[in-house]
Amino acid sequence: MIDIFMSGKFFSKAIAVIFGIIIAISFLAFTLCWNKEEEVSQVVKQLSQPVIKWQKITIEEEPKKFLISLRIPEVAIYTNDSLSEKINGDVAGYIGALKDIFIRGVKTAADDNGEASTLNIDTEILLMSPRLISLAFTSSDHFSGSKAGDPKRTYLIFDLEKGEMMREGNELFRDDLAWAEAIRIMKPLLLSKYDGEPSCDLMFAPKQEALSASCIGVDYSNEDKGPFSIFGDIPISAIQEFVAPWALKEIFQPGES
Image 1 (cartoon, one colour):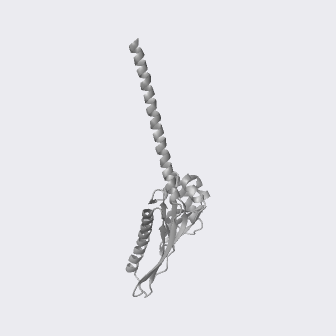
Image 2 (cartoon, rainbow, N blue to C red; image 1 turned 90 degrees about the horizontal axis):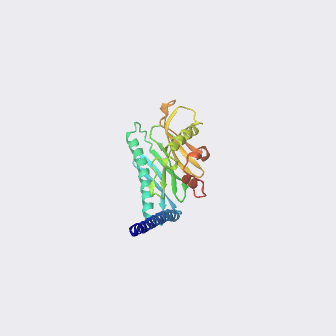
Image 3 (cartoon, helix red, strand yellow; image 1 turned 90 degrees about the vertical axis):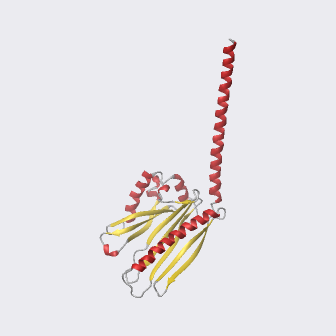
């Protein structure tokens, strides 16, 4: 009888100890989760005031070979110098790649009538929120001895919370299926007023209460025209159901654009 009583008492203590451990683990998990959420909130709060400065750069090669005009943003996040450097490095690398493609085109151009080939790259801030910086680059080129092509618009999107550049833009949507459905809707909307047979790849970036979209490719109804390019805005209402809630919050909040 005493053994049974002692065993029961021991069992009760064991149960109490187990419950105590469970409660302690639960409290620790809650505390870590709360601290993580607080840390993310602090990061967003600290990065809520990026400052953009602008540089205008002109590059000319003599004798009258080419002329390049650039308008480049310089991002300053005073609470995170390393993130500022990363963003500015990515922007400089991207503009450098556009410049290099143009220079290769100048060197391989068939005709040279004595005129300088020209490239102009203008950068626009589409959205600057506590979490996102969205940039559009509109490049216009004209090669000596040839007809000027369509202006081309491309984008870079930076997620300040993750400290990285978005690669595809599908991160803005609920999932990959939602992203694919949004593309299916956006592309015909962008091309609806274009008369031709374009085949192009769609690019996009968030702006205030909309998405800026661009399509670059070829027009099979006018292949002599050269590369085809068109860009414009897509109302966010057209694809709102597919956009991730956090991205909608950034797109709809008052901010600088």
